[in-house]
Length: 432
Image (cartoon, rainbow, N blue to C red; front, side):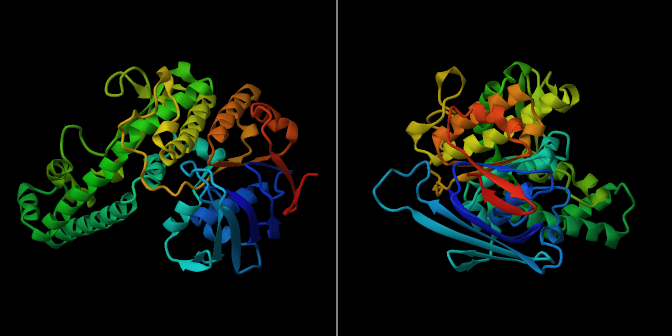
């Protein structure tokens, strides 16, 4: 859990030290005061970038007139969900990130330089919920792939490497196909003789085999975790009052059902040559939000039939399901959260836990959620957060323009302690 954060030259924050952080922290201030910048700084510390789509570019984060920003955080570690209580003092992690206006990043963990952002992401897992998040269902499939990949990344230790190797193999295959069509002067679409020549190209065959093998691995990691994530989503949506909508998640791996990726690549070679890129594989996967009884048959996309308000509720449930997923995979078997029907999420033999997670506290960043939901939904959100916080391993940072706007959510916390910080012109001060 983060205990203090220091922010330097981040947007409108010149130099700010925020100490004595609580499990639930509220940042109160007018629009433009710097509330969101605090949440962005925490996210940037863990991920090297902002969670905002607009205005989150690399050069926009550094204060005007400055050449770099710095974010430093100190967190208690070793007291996660799967760690037994002892009399030993907690471990302290000191995390630092500096970023130049041109985007160059330097990371340090406990004073030692780190070269991979993924190492920091494992130390400081963070999830943000802001106005951009509610475009998850209506935006590109890449956004929804990132949704499931965040979960898989924190559980499957080999996923990140397999995903990078797959992307490299995919680039090589695409490059070779474009070279073949360029060298042969192939018209579109290519004829059978050209396809036959491509099939005989040993270099293309090697990279096609690599794409098929690594693609199956990446898809397998995703599929293995998807069932649990879907069950936690359904439970959370029901708690938020949306269980009656009949919504469920569906996963499409990126190629036809019943076929191997190798078979799909062979079948689609002519079209791939014509277009110059590979059209099937886990890079074309999607997490679909469906309404109806059958994912394969009568279901329809939720974005086509649900109202904007209902879609926001669905996205909220999806993000909270990620938090519960992380909690679930960080705890021993006997602490698994319950799901509908009185069972345990994922069953007793799902093999999803005990993956060596460090048990770090996940930072949940709620940016002005009171502007997105009415009082009834905010109270339901407060009750879900109360349940999440009771399970441990979660720290919340929320922003609001007025205390009354967020009060329904706080009412749902069952009297749980929270700390209020006032933000004005980039200056943060703890409420008395």
